[in-house]
Amino acid sequence: MSKKDILNRLKRKHPQINVDQISKIYEKFIELISQALLDRKRIEIRSLGIFYTKAIKEKKNARNPKTGEKIYVPEKVKLRFKASKELQKFINTE
Image 1 (cartoon, one colour):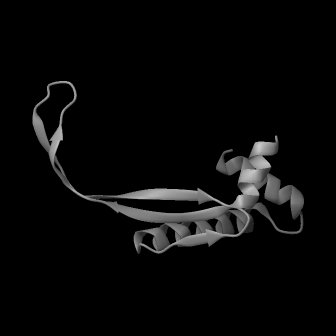
Image 2: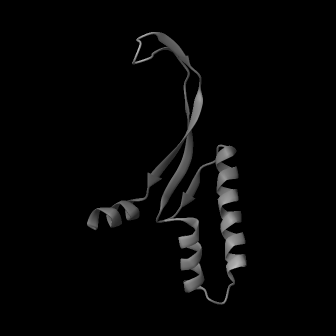
């Protein structure tokens, strides 16, 4: 689902709010979530799930699978998502 689809659905559900206002709310929501993840905070949206970051340790003895040579892989942060039980149940019933 694209941003445009989301905005159109919100407009149909709330016709009293204009598209510009809906777009600003959407942008602010995404900005707040992004900033929280940058600050390494956990975001819980009930009935959807939890977004969180996880630090992956550096690897000094990793190997390039193509050539077999040893390479260094620096530490990095990965984004993770854990679906709520409610969402899991909904997805698995369809």
